[in-house]
Image 1 (cartoon, rainbow, N blue to C red):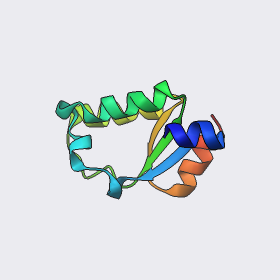
Image 2: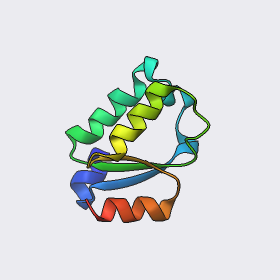
Image 3: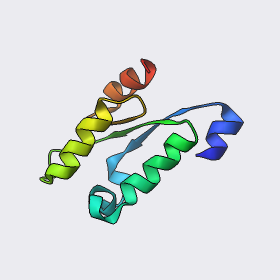
Image 4: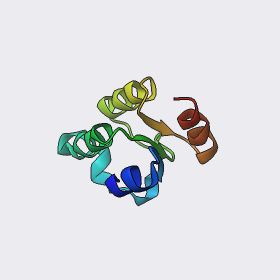
Length: 89
């Protein structure tokens, strides 16, 4: 992430949910918070794409909702929506 940010001056990344460990989506592991904080620290914007309806955790749904209403982290269904959202922030 740091290499991308500083060597290419790119500050937006799209990641497919399928390449992320399921532990990321269990908020009790604190993995999501720790990883996503790094994106904030490096002033990167990130969109994670995939189907998030499979998760039943209210905490995770609230987390996704809050992220999607922010300016840096987004959980979106597909690449086209991710590109659109990242292009507008």
